Image 1 (cartoon, one colour):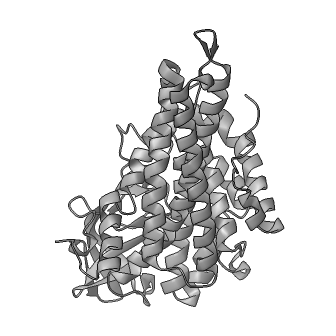
Image 2 (image 1 turned 180 degrees about the vertical axis):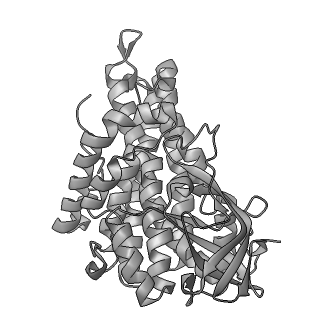
Length: 389
């Protein structure tokens, strides 16, 4: 199949700087050469392509927006978004890895950690020598993280952690976990290192989605954390939600990549697939599907560029990020399903990326806030009336 050329119906590249386009094209080439050829095998076997971690680190894809003094790339938020877009064009699992490493592990250490914690962990995470995970969701508390039952108790020289976390990307392979627990009734962040006594991270199996991503449980049984491993500047539910805002921003961009991969595949197929003596692209119903795909991709692109500019100006509201995550994931999933319809029976084969993206997007629609929860976040913002309970 010819190399991916991009989807840009409204000349939105004109809204990007030369540096942003260079970043996007570099990661696009990386995905074409290193991800596309191997990702179906990893998806089929349910494995994460670990050998890509040092290559991604070399390109500055971990903690991309953080300062260079910690070994990070110091990118702006639009460039970071374009990175997420291209990684997810490869696979949602790959984007999830980079998104967790950056937005859910490096960001909280940078935002809430001590200078010692930042100097120790950020360079390791940026270089890919260390992998991180983020422990917020619990078996019984997903959309209501404030109900968490994981507890930290202050003891001499540290803390004792008890509880469990669920649906944790990178958990089993992580060297460091950013774990949220209630300490005297207040939510605080803790750094739990691999090998700590009482801490285990069994991998979850049997997934039909995000199969090329490591998903785990985190279990804490009288897990002793040294005093210096608390994120001292964290406090309350606002702290982990600030991290989720970073991750949701990356998702909003990432799903454009999934959508573009599905649209590009469907368009090429529709032009070459002959039925009733003409390509199926000649039929009105096929064209209607393709036009829907292109329209929603274009809207998502413009939405994200504007959001990225707001974020770079420190003007982006978390509700605006919720709107972008909600909209872009919803339409990316619809685009994946329509692409499968255009490909017919061939759409279920791993010769094409469509069914893999569709299955992955079912998870992306749920994690980092479900479609329904983002609806209520935006609903409260515009009406002033919370409708969560």
